[in-house]
Image (cartoon, rainbow, N blue to C red):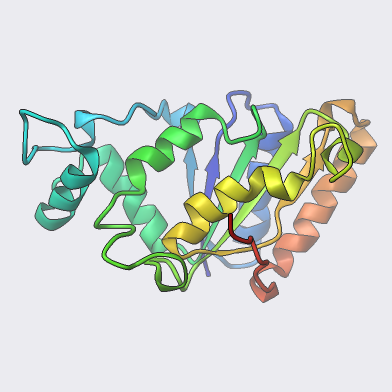
Length: 222
């Protein structure tokens, strides 16, 4: 199978980076094809504007979605965006590896979505949710939190983690057709001992060995 893994963390020695390399090694060893986007290492520009395109349909008034449709029809995406779009289109499974920042993805990953998930190419004209462009693909969020697990329960300080992730699960992934798998969450790795972190990695390896046998989860509606 073909897997795209997107990493959004600036520290190469972080738990997120270790999860990223562990996934690459585990999936490659199992015979899968793996492509990656290490956004900080790539110095990916998260600012979505006219630079997304090689030419504009209307240079006098910039309307991003209309320009995305035009670029889809005329092969007009900038080279860095085109490369990322082709990776998403290529994969059977997309994994996002990131720390939960301000109850969401880091800005560099949100900017990647803003620029890469283009109207006309990734969605539009009724191609949404169950009829989405990526309805044959799966997506998995693998993330870390700053707090302990009990803080992310329905009665916890931060509230239910599934509700926190819903805008990502439904508003980004399910919106474009992806079937969403159960998130892989490591709660407070900075508070864990080395032995505990190694157990988390072992659980990640075991899950990845069977990930293509998993059924999607229901991400709900608003």
